Every structure is written in C-alpha cells, then in structure tokens.
Image (tube, rainbow, N blue to C red):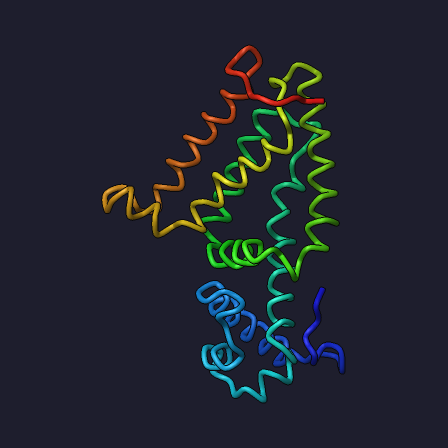
Amino acid sequence: MALPRAARTQRRTRIQEEKEELILEAALEVFATNGFRGSTIDQIAEVAGMSKPNLLYYFRTKEAMHRALIERVLDSWLDPLREFDAEGNPVTEIRSYIRRKLEMARDFPRESRLFANEVLQGAPRIEDALMGPLKSLVDEKAKVIRAWAKAGKIAKCDPYHLIFAIWATTQHYADFDVQVRAVLGKDRAGEGRFEDAARFLEHLFVNGLAVGGPAAGGSAA
C-alpha cells in the first residue's frame, strides 16, 4: 500500500487521518473526472479546500495520491470475486457475483471510472498488481469454474472469458452511466435500472451456463 508521507514520518493522529481521507476523496473526484494526465495537484488542493503546501505534507506527488486510490479500489473491487465459493451452488454463486458487481457499479461509479482510466492508459502504475494478485485470484476462481463444469454442474466454458464478460457487463453501468441513462430515457433511468440489469444479466449468464442449454463457447480445459 502506498502510504502518505505523514504516515512514513510519524504515528498519525486522528486529525491527520481525517486530512488524508479528505485529500483522497478530493483526488478521487478530480481523477475520475479528468483522468490522471488531466489532473493537477492544484485542482486536488482546491477541491479539498487546502493549500498546496499543506496537501504536499501528506502526499508528496500526484502519483502517490493516485497510487493510494488505485490500490484501495483494486482491493475492494476484488472482494466479490474472493467471495466466489467453490463449495457453493454454481447458480447461486454466479447470481450473487453479478449482483455484487452491479452494486459496486451503482455505489462506487467514480472508483470504477478511475480504474478504467488507468487501464485505458496501459495500466502503467498498476501493471504489477494486475499480473500479480489479480491474476492469481482469477486463476484460482477459474479452477473453481472448471471444476463445476467437470462435475456437470454447469456447461463447459472458458472460465476467464466468463469472468471478463461479467466484469464488462456490470462495470458498464458505472463507466458508461451517462450513455445508459440517455438511452433508457427518463422513465427507465432511475435507480431501478440496476435491478433491471441484475435480472437480465442473471438470466443471460445462468441460462447460458445451463447444462444442455445454449453453447457457452470455448473449453473448460
């Protein structure tokens, strides 16, 4: 975890912790709106209501703030996948995973856009995390999905592309929220759009993975 400068120099007080959270909240707003390259320390200081020198006491660089946010987002973003239970019922687990991902898209849209912006830039600041903890977790859950298929609980499928497809369809509602609301129109663009999406995606994935149902494509091997 990228620690703020104050945390490396002394034990933090409650006020310092509150200041750090204030700075990270401001940084999240600025980064999610402007992207990393389009954001400046001055903008973050203004949103935080702090002077630039005061902000730099806690985080020496823009990169340090961005890294702290990205690591926090990546850790929380993986929680739903960590909860994917090998001993659970596959249909229940897949439905729960879809709903947890949609809840995150609904509740943390700025975090999703922050992460998407980083990946679109080639993930220069988190490549090690993607190739390390993220890949390890996905490899682990791919084995779970393969085991379900081998046991005849779900149709054979490529577990990696199944996970990618769930990521793509759920995070779309955060990353492209403006487009979603515009296309749905005023009558359908309220909070109910997430429940509508959950029901549709559950039906899509569960039916697609049903044994004897439509071919899921790829191989479970």
